[in-house]
Length: 308
Ligand code: BDR
Ligand code: CA
Image 1 (spheres, rainbow, N blue to C red):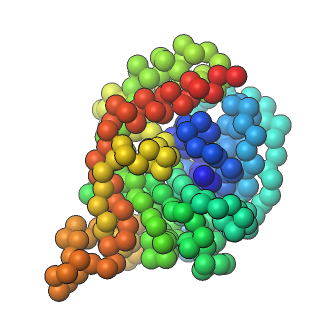
Image 2 (image 1 turned 45 degrees about the vertical axis):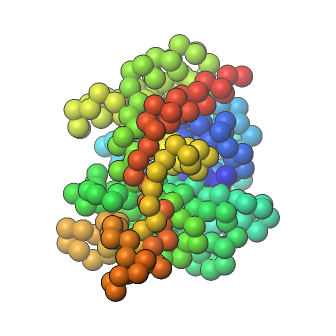
């Protein structure tokens, strides 16, 4: 697995999860929840805290065309809430995330890409080498929603932050799984999970507990929820434990122009072509159901398994 991310509270917990449940070979960073300096620094801090030997490659500092946006109101000014990060000694392996993605796809049989930020790096990689999708075993994205949105009424943050990039990825990906808000809003982690990680007491578990604590505060203030969605970790688990999810193949397009709908993932729920037979464009596996307790346990158990 290769993770493309913008840490981000939930990206951080997703990286910790992936380090246990997957063979995680590398991390690329992208501008998103906060600027690229912060997302890259955060990725380095996470791997260092957890003692992981995983390279971090810095990626795009702005969307393809759209103005840069962020989500610091959710993730805090530097992206990891108010967590006290240790001094970071690791440095990036390169400033060429796109080149790294292409090299790994060429050299690693069965590589699965899990994208949990705006899709800028992935789109740039496809632009540089249109053969990329065929060399991956699949792309799983946290992004979009069959119904609704979070940053606007119709758009989810990762798609909304770089809709042109998302349009390219949804058009060109060979095997794409969409883990949208339909799924991630069903997987809320709460005080019980935070306390399990807090009590474990080692650095990676304490970091995850602090991040979840901050996410819980935000989810309470912003939505009145008692649990916090850890969106990106769901995408990791969807890639490694597909039997815990249900979905349908659908034709999905990204709305680029609508005044109220820019960044919307328009999911054709008919599953039919306009003339009736199955839609041959219905190529995106859109997940909608999830075994919530199993996914929550998978995430928490993974973090606890990082005990040095
Ligand atoms: C997605 O947007 C980001 O803020 C999160 O990290 C997640 O990837 C949820 O909409
Ligand atoms: Ca993210």
